[in-house]
Amino acid sequence: MVSRLVRTYLRPHLGRLIAAIACMVVAAGTTAAFTQLMKPIIQEIFVNKNPAMLWPIAFMTLLVFLARGLASYGQAVLMSHIGLAIMARIQTEMFHRLMHTELGFFNSNSPGQLVSRFVNDVQMMRNSVAETLTGLGKHALTLVALVGVMFYEDWLLATVAFIAFPTAVLPIVRIGKKMRKVSGRTQQHLGDLTTTLDEAFQGMRSVKAYGMEERETERAESSIGRVFKLMLKAARVQNVLTPVMEVLGGLAIVAVLIYGGNQVISGEKQAGAFFAFITALLLAYEPLKRLAKLNNQLQRGLAAAQRVFSLIDRQPTLQERPDARPLRLTAGEVELDDVSFRYANTEEKALHGVRLRAPAGKTCALVGASGAGKSTVFNLIPRFYDVEDGAVRIDGQDVRDLTVASLRSQLAVVSQEVMLFDATVRENIAYGRPDASERDVVQAAEASGAADFIAALPDGYDTHVGPRGARLSGGQRQRVAIARAMLKDAPILLLDEATSALDTESERKVQNALATLMRGRTAIVIAHRLSTVRDAEVIYVLDKGRVVESGDHNELLAKRGAYARLYAMQFATDGSSGAGGAAAETAADETAADETAEQESDPAAAPTNKTASA
Ligand SMILES: Nc1ncnc2c1ncn2[C@@H]1O[C@H](COP(=O)(O)OP(=O)(O)OP(=O)(O)O)[C@@H](O)[C@H]1O
Image (cartoon, rainbow, N blue to C red; front, side, top):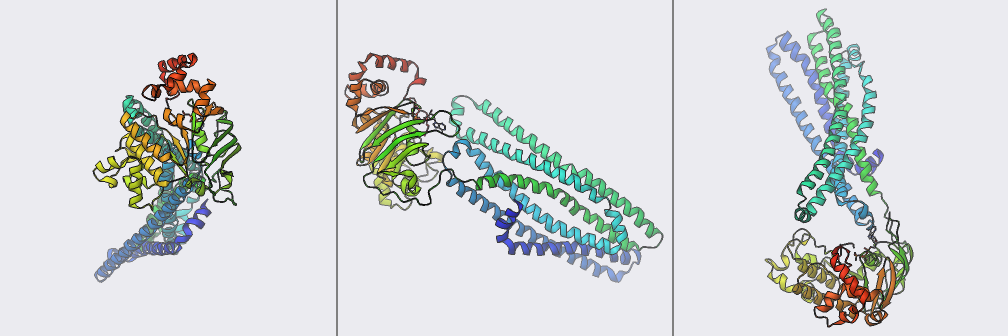
């Protein structure tokens, strides 16, 4: 991992790194030079009391410190540049990888965990890279220079001073290992914390509606507590070295004082030389301590790097074939041929041998109870997931043989869960076609019945819709989403009809917009409206992942089977509120009527009670 960091990420900054090292050499040199200044300071000023030397020594000292200041500045800025550039590159690579990762991955990796890797882990890596390089450069160089001075001054005294330091190596290595483990766990818990926060903030409406503020606070508190404990543990582990190094430092000074002091007293050594030595020893102590702790920092960085690289290196399980061809759309017929499918980590198949044909340019409706597999069918057509058995074909071409871009460019998806981005209305409409002209955008808005409300917004098409489109109403959001699909002008439409609580007026507008959108296109619709099922060329009734019936509305009603029952339950209200007594035709079926009553008394079990699942 270290060699990868060096080869891939550090190499492009070689020039800057060399300049930084040059600065470090200067900084280390000036530190050593200062110890040499101690000799004339003590000897000439304090012992010989020579006034002629005062100004030159003072000037030299100033020069040394000036050089040290400039070199340290240069080094710090250059190292920050390298660290930040590496961080930005890793973040970009990570994002790029995630953009091309299959959808299933996001079912098991929460946004919070992923955000945490972007922020916390990458930050940890950056600190580690910067500290390690600075440590190895500046501190090691300074140490070498100072130790050099000490050996030059008196090699015997230097040996006495450093004799005990190698004993610190063993604890350094052991503590480093422990640090890596603790740090890895801390990063994991930081990810959990981000998830908790993300869920609470995203779900603020539900939190408040259910009065769960206290419960969420407790959840956050316990998550914060876990991170706190681990960080405390890390701090304890990391600082175990401090007493070890202090004791060793104390021993060195005492040994030098006794041995060197004796030499000064007996007149063997000059006071100036002794002070130069002691200064070097004292100055060496700081970089030595830093170097001892460097391994900890390195291990923390490596723990973070492991998490980051595991994401960057992950191969998407759903990939384009090397010989993939672009989709050649002729009519726009969609077919599921004996398709079986199972979501990762589930026992039960979501689809069993589903055969389904959506005729070109016509509407095909999917109906069925909640969990029957309707959204799963939708997931397979744009190849968000691959089938386990069978095949999904568009105009006879297996979607697995096609380039993903060509496949998805021919599909427009309008789901219940409308996703608007925190941008202007215009940008949201043009989301699938950023190069669309103003005229196209306005036309799409007009066709989807969104133009009127957009005109009434404070800045018209330039109005910002807020996070997830929060500043628009539910119906407005849906019409913007329909305009988006309209602008994309794809020949095949996957439409999850909304049942969300829209008032009759908005509902009618959305419905009109959808009718316009569907005209002339192959539309596969998860149907919740009477008008849709009645006008559909073919209706497929799904139950527990199987197609149990198919045909047009009248054929299916005549069968008096699953559809007739569902119809009575699901579309009864729609029928009675103006759809022309169609519901009455079948509601006469006693079983159906009974079931309707049951469903009404238990809303949680009603098939129309949808929870967003796509
Ligand atoms: N991402 C997923 N991971 C695991 N299982 C899933 C996933 N999505 C759906 N399922 C399961 O697959 C089955 C079919 O679900 P699907 O969402 O296709 O039903 P649906 O007919 O669209 O339901 P609804 O009308 O409630 O949206 C269900 O049993 C569901 O629990």
